[in-house]
Amino acid sequence: MNTIKHTLAVLGLITAPAFAATPVSINIDAGKPGPVISKYVYGQFAEHLGTGVYEGMWVGTKSSIPNTRGWRNDVVGALKELHVPLVRWPGGCFADTYHWRDGIGPQDKRPSNIYGSHIEEINAVGTHEFFDLIEMIGADAYVNGNVGTGSVQEMADWVQYMTAEGGSPLARLRALNGREKPWKVAYFGIGNELWGCGGNMKPDYYANLYSNYEHFLWAPEKSRPKMIASGGSGFDTAWTQVLSKELKGRTIGITVHQYTVPTGNWEVKGKDLGFKEGEWISTLANTLKMDQLIKDHVAVLDKSDPEKKIGLMVDEWGTWYDEAGARSALFQQNSLRDALVAALNFHIFHEHAERVTLTTIAQMVNVLQAMILTDKEKMVLTPTYYTFQMYAPFQDAKSLPLAIADNTSYTLGTTTIPGVSASAARAKDGKVYLSLVNTDPHKAVDVAVNVSGTKVNGAAGKVLTSAAMDAHNTFQNPQVIKPAAFSARAAGGKLSIKVPAKAVMVVALEE
Image: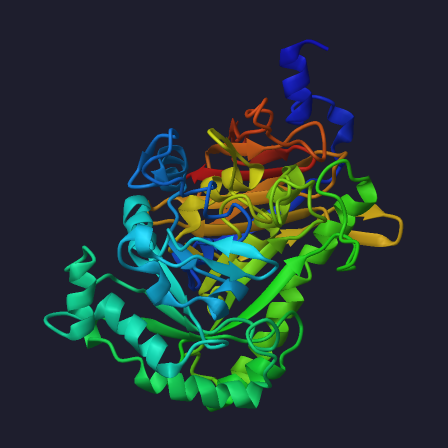
């Protein structure tokens, strides 16, 4: 097959027998906009693990890799193009062993610490460097404080150091270290995973600790961060139940962490590449459980917080596979399957936009479901990166009611999942955007689109797909998979979109 025919086949624009006789029908009600999809749903996470920060983003000013004040120019440029709205730092489990004073002052005088499994932390990236990155990429900051091995005084001092104005001692210390103007800290997390790596606590005990810490985290009113409480893991709603009752008025969000593991077994999680179709469908089926997880936590919040003042923050999510070789801790390759996982989760977050007001995928570079992979001077963008890029119009867009009729199913063995997933919103540019996922790795699907109250003349956007389920970009071949332009015109007043097998698509509807 020549190159053109091969591309058309991959995009599902030939091989007509693959299409179902009855198209999937999507009806969008543009006249009844729902909650705004917060831009912070598209947040990122940068933790001091593996090469997630050092080498992955920070190489130091003396490196031969082009950099600006130590940050890699290629990575910074890619993140700017991604329109990253928020970055969570410095952890994660790392946060509850991190002492912020180790990361300020002259770099050659900062201490070197041992973290976790004898991993050296050189403290070259501290508060000043992090905010330098934040300002370069145009993102907001979500800083995680140390409850596990820290103190109320230490955390209060850090918030003062970042936000205080004028001549307070900590403001003067910040100025002495090169920053006179306070930084903007959008969110501040009081601890992380206190049920586990953050201290093996019970929710009632942490609720008391949180209240004590939060009471002393003073900042000028105009620059006071929004405080986030560290909640439970997965489907365990006990933490959400206790914290939503005990911390009303003291927190704007409670976190929950949920990772997608293909096998559901943390001992043998599954491969990042070279997997069989069984792990394709199990991965997608497991990631779709996010919807029920959010419903369970939201049901608890609705009882404790009917005024909806407390958000559910999914500040760790994404795929977690067996480590790929010995390159670095928690390194894994990133394939088309990860792109679908990201898109399916976006749709779930959009559906729960009223409560899910912030999420951060784990993680940004070189760790777990990363946007970017690096190897010394080389950099490659992943399918997950492209998915985030395609979905950028949904940031701060108004969600629109969407109904799917005559949906297909994708079945393998005893597992069945919906064939098509979709979401719609009216973006800040005034256009209606429609996102589509076809989970079936074999069959393309016709989707008939109807928008109530308006005539749709066509659609234009991007589609991400490939012939292989584990298609991925490498340092040797960095453009194996990337989005392709897509367009469709209405015929007879009806718009039909052909969605290729195993694909993610985002289009703007032409009204």
